[in-house]
Length: 266
Image (tube, rainbow, N blue to C red; front, side, top):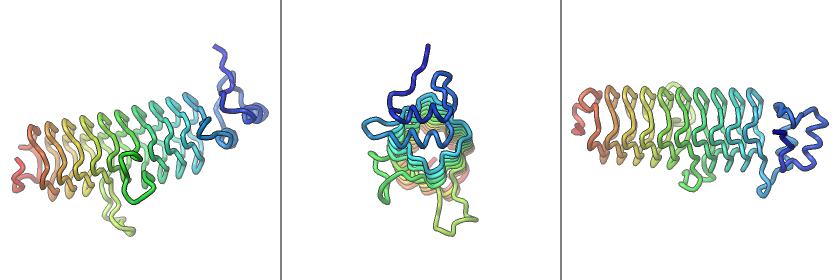
């Protein structure tokens, strides 16, 4: 089937053709070409980059607000401080991408591949706390091995793969205060957190029902009021974790979990 210039391009479509972009062959954009296309986008006519190949591009600080990036390939792309608020990244491939300081309010990463990606200091709200209305969506996303130090309170991570993800506070580098993954009130139902590093992470009132936490490091984590009913805590490290009000009914692997000996949580 012959592909045509996306309807949102307008005059930018002609500029892209003159710059060497071939809409029929669907060749990759350059940063400059994307900047032209994005400049013409508006809330009424957002940029449509669904399925496009943007691998390895420097997309830092570009404004993708409201853009359709569903199923786009952004492997190893640099999205440092990019504006992704309200963008559709469902099913996108962001493996190894850098999203440090990216604006992700209301962004949809459902089923996206973010394995090995860097998500440091994500901007998730216009205020101090992230509201449910602003929280990004990572449902069923692959975040295995990702580095995540961000405020993701109330975010939807249900069914997400966070195995081996690094979300612990680095106590050797805290010159600006305690930097850690903040997941208070987040939905982590049936999430895979096996082997994840969550030392000192904030998980107050998080919904971790039926989550896989086998071998996870939760030492010093704040799990007050969290719901871990049916979760698998086999060989997890909960040394020094805060567990007041934590629900553990039906949780598995408590006998092999470390740090529960004197907590009364067994």
